View 1 (spheres, rainbow, N blue to C red):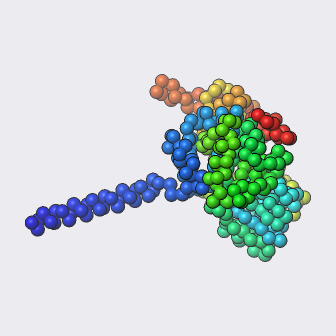
View 2: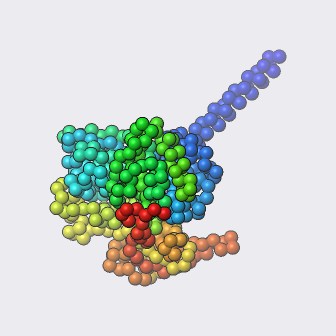
Amino acid sequence: MAQATRKKLVETEVDTALDARTAAQSHFRTLRLGTPFQPRIDALGLKQDWYSWAGYRAPHSLWDEELEYFAIRSQAALFDISPMTKYRIEGPDAEAYLDRVTLRDVTKLKPGRVHYTAWCDDEGFVLDDGTLFRLSPTRFRLCSQERHLPWLLDSAVGYEVSVEEETEAVAGLALQGPTSFAILRDAGFAGVERLKVFDLAEFAHDGATVTISRTGFTGDLGYELFVPADKALSLWDRLMAAGELRGIRAIGYTALNRARLEAGLIVANADFTTSEHAIRTDRLRMPDEIGLGFMIDPAKGHFNGRRAILEARAKKKLRHVLVGLEIEGNIPAEHAIVYYRKSQEVGLVSAAMWSPMAKRNIALASLKRPYGDTIVDDLWVEIYAMRELQYQKLMKKAKVVQRPFIKLDRRTANPPSDF
């Protein structure tokens, strides 16, 4: 009897240990955070194809990545941007503070407007890029890929300004595509037709307020909506009901990523490495090296990295250039090495696709100057294509082309077209 009892105790201990190990492993496999829209997104996630976006469970694709892409270009696509980091910055010195830490001239950003901007460390290397919303003369919202609260707070010393992260408190949606305006109008957002590109306005929703801006990451007609987290589901349902006859569809990141590439837009830690994440010094990038030089106004007062950026320009110390490429054939050159005269390695492709809209094989690539800058001929990419269960190396001709790869008139049409 004692032996049987001892055996039972050992078996129980083993079972308990296995359960604990399984639970621990499950903890690392399970994405812990859900956005305010998660119940609706989970219900539509037929593929169960998830990834972690800043710790949140986000979909690569919900139902079909090809059709999700075409929903952006021919109907309207709804994408959850709630995991995007959001900061509320307000106070009498908010304008001066943001003018000091970001590249663009914030004094030119009027209330009710948005601009795309970036910010750098003291050596002029890009910390991140994002959008700055001026909600009122003294109140802003800064949206970014990475989290920067300690840096923003340190930079606020001496300014009468408050900086607070509101990522969890504010839910966000991107509504993109040719029928997006008609859906907002049919949903009852009266006056939304007056929004021009990079305009924003506030509208009533479910006893609260939703901020709608004519912005997006697709190069198409589109809007972004920000609402208190507890009003998220009612906003989702309102849009879905209004868009039922306009072809509204929820999408994942794969489709959005294709659209942003066609628009020639860059992604932090995909097309360039932010300076806080760069391990090797040759991964650091200045604004001019990733196509953000247009943001810099030499006549503007001091801002983070100003001296280093202007010195690099004057002394021609810029080492890289980010370019658009058109590549022969129709096989995407994802993560392909770029060569000069088929032999000298000069850069790397960061994003690539066959574009259904442009009918071209397109890519973004970071090249070592002078290649892509003053030397743009005789460039090649090395592609490994699967042919009959075996990889075959292909050397394909590439030429430097202007971005965006496609330009849609409906994106900037005023008033927006009623599709």
